[in-house]
Amino acid sequence: MGKPTKEAKKASWDRKKNAILRNYRKMQKERKGVNFKPNESQGNSNESKTFYHRAMQEYERKKAIKEERKQIREAKRKEKEEALKKYAEKKRENFRKLSQKTKWGQPVMRGRMEILLERIQKSVADDTIK
Image (cartoon, rainbow, N blue to C red; front, side):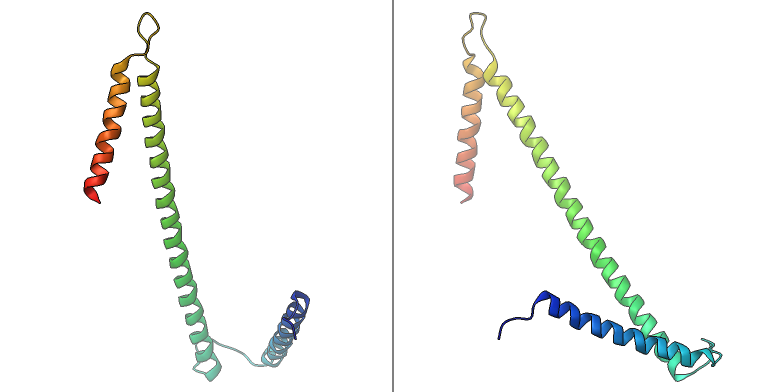
């Protein structure tokens, strides 16, 4: 026997939903005759309050989780943006150093040596960390 199809799941959900709606409407018809006051201490009102409070707590909890996730996404976005800015600046600086020419059109070796020195220092620093 295979898994239920999406249509079967949807039909099952629709039946459940319709049953709940029927029961709700039936309850509303029965309550119409009764003067319902929320301040009265009835069994149903206490249940309604607890249900309402539970629903509010659940809503607040989900809202807090959503806000936390939003802050995490924002922090990651800012971090990524900062890394991109740093990368672009480094790339621009390297291009400036590599594109310098002497008055005869020869590349300036000073910039190239600086870049090589930075690479060597970085690799040495990485090796000492490990």
